[in-house]
Image (cartoon, rainbow, N blue to C red; front, side, top):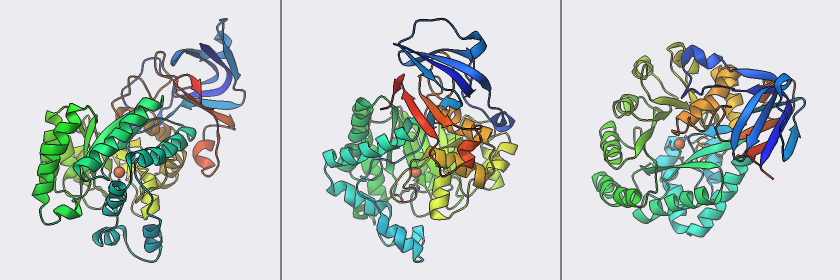
Length: 412
Ligand code: NIG
Ligand code: FE
């Protein structure tokens, strides 16, 4: 099956030779071709270039993209889209004055979602999660990482990871699974946190590794959740079983989680709303991707990741949604890109790099996703006719996407 897209007003993120990630000043450069064509063969990008050189080939389908922009699908490297129910009541409680931390301390928050998850059947969780996955695919996401972490019991965590596995089997979108048993200390272990950590390391992890249910291991390293020493022990146990760490750090407090992530060569450190100069310096010249989650900052009214300071120090940044029931009930990467421009002062070029190739890096898939490069997956967004790609962040509340292509197929 060969598809030819013609008359593309501007083809974004074209890289003849793909890079693994872009950092610092390079983030401001978004290579494009104006008046372009692109050829898809089966599920791969087979060719692209200027319309002046459009090849004369047999095609099964031609898409005329006059006036439209084409770019690689968003790569959302941090989500929790497998969960049961919602936390609307906590949202209203926050409007009425309680903080996210106060709600969590009362037994709400993650523990509230854990209770719901353990009471809900695997099939029902699958149905709810599949609707969220389909929703984000329609919003232009072509690869997604999904975490466990609302089970907090052996059975609950395995149930979540099996749902992620089932989604990965049933959908063409690339899905990476992360074990986040260390999301909170469950109520049953309130007085025995060591007991819960032992349960994760001795019961959950071996079962997960045996059944190949996760690619990555995550820890919520934060005051009131897991300490730096605990985070290190959990990362170490995961690494021994082949799981690379991606950790939640510096959401509310800077307690040394970034330094721990760097020490254990975490693929990414995520959140970063509260960053000291030392935290920024610790990430310099490392292979660890800093991931910002501006929809979480927006929803919780907490600080935004200091992108300008980080980019000025030569760091890369990836952008992701954090789609979850408590801090970010939204999986809209278009909104994330807009928020990064509006609130973090990232330029459109930096934000698009952060949401494509750097997001791919934060999932370990930049060889196959995140740029327009021959041989990469044909995961594409075709916009409606728009004046320029600046519209993507500028018209922040509009749906500018017309067509989604995943693995060479138009999403119906
Ligand atoms: O990434 N911070 C930790 N975990 C999630 C929120 C979890 C929840 O409130 O359910 C996050 O923001
Ligand atoms: Fe998260």
